[in-house]
Image (cartoon, rainbow, N blue to C red; front, side):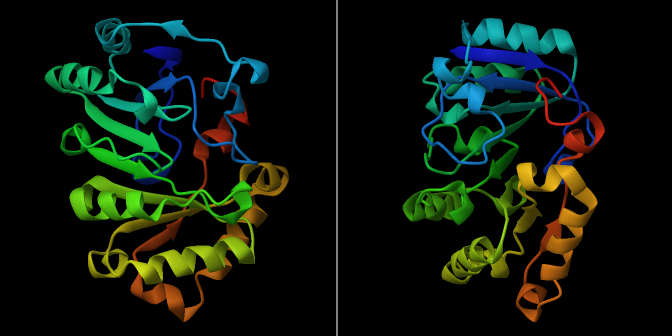
Amino acid sequence: MNVMEIYRPIQGEGLLMGIPTTFVRFFACNLRCSWCDTKYSWSIREGGTWEVMSPHDVAERVHMLKARHVVLTGGEPTLQQELLSLVEILRSGGHHITVETNTTIFPESIVPKIDLWSLSPKLSSAGEQYLRYSIIERFLDNVQSHCQQWKFVVRDDVDEHALRQLLTRYPLFKEHRLSIILQPEGDEAFPNYGSALEQLAERLRDPFWDSYFVRVLPQMHVIIWGRKRLV
């Protein structure tokens, strides 16, 4: 496995925000989002370095940090061929496992073994057409509702329009009250994070959102430590 870093801060995003968590960041991503905050995980050119580790070595490093909660992230973690082996070792050690994914790959073998799928399809501001509808459908159909959180970076009206289309396309978001999390885009938000959150909150006044289980959340680690690595 190509591992960039293993570290223990707190979870800064989503439903488990604030919980002490060990992060395993893998090298390589199949997307090139314009606002990505971990471009160093893309390639050597962006500053990427990594260590080749076996699943057992990764798990041992995780165990040493003693956090029950573990996040497998990247890059895109589902690109790692031995992810199933690592997940099984971590599960046997009693860890709660979250996978952060861009929702472009459906790793069928590990889907039922993950406690929380943090699903983050990329909207228009990412710079490309990165929505993979067939993959989104497979996650919706095969992951239990309480094991899903859907995180969307919303920068502008174009992003919100694309998100509304996506939610309307899949009634399960409404019918199963799936957790939908809206976050501001980091580069634009960082100079005045409070204002960026306020703008997102104002969007939720529209009656469209009344039928959805939606909330606005920050990247708490960015507020505390700024936009840097290992936090």
